Image (cartoon, rainbow, N blue to C red):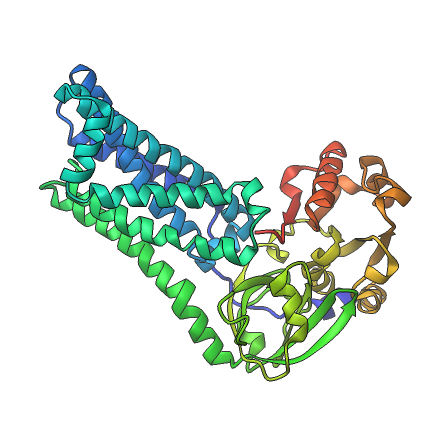
Length: 448
């Protein structure tokens, strides 16, 4: 038996993975169906007021559909998480959020303008009349303001000023916005008035998304944690500001995780129970223990160093597509920096084929899992390279020329990359310059 065969993960039944292209096609079909709903219920459009109102109705329908899509993308459906990946879903969610807010804004302005032109009134007078006289329009106004507020907080400049936990919990106002907007759509939408099939389809869309959210974001984590009975067993210092948290439980090797994936962890202490934060497994799961490794970058992660054995844990997951399922080649290059080494540590032990791991750190003291990585490299004959030093000391460590010199046949490698944003951007630019095909570059961010 070869070394690779000994270190391969146990065989599991194939799990459903949604294809990104298919998911986008389904979402696009839904948008076309929404526009078709307007077309079916519009006999003719005449005059400037009619054109403005028609455009307002289309943008309103698309904004309502967009809200449902936003929530569905973040419902943590396992097939989406495994097939599309959390990083990509997050980017889609952010982009769809911008589109939805602009569509909602266009809907508000076009409808008010169209009605004002048709009635021969001023825009301000028409806005006041609609808000105070039309059913559920006041609720829709509140929903719109909530969406704009959440969108403003998601702008990169604003997010930098917010704690992750604050930003995360403010996003729950999107649920309230969806509920308020839903009633407005059915009460005043001409496409739904007297159209029972359209009403049922809209109910099915929103109730289906609500069911996904209730199950995968609330009920499934409770079921998972009751089944596996998770508790902290010990906390081990790994490097300055970095600790590993060992979590015990039952049948943990049957929870469906794959090396490279992460969970959202909720530690049931007085200060931490209300927040669920994402951390990758830093080692393959055993039957009775999991391990995550955390760097004290914020209040929540710093507080984890003070956890006591016996603390109960609620986990959501596993999530992410940063796994062996991406591997199409027998040669793989893993590049990690900072706490980004955690998912790569698990992959370095379990990925089949010929592996090279490049580990970036500012000082030798910052190298986490050094002994473990060297033992794994020796056991399976893999290459382990360290890139240690500050930027001032060693300059720009990752260039196309440097990577080609370190990794012969670089273009034929599958690349897994995880690290701080600056390092990730440098490595991606170098890989593109080295002509590594984009389909072979897989990167995960630990910033959400």
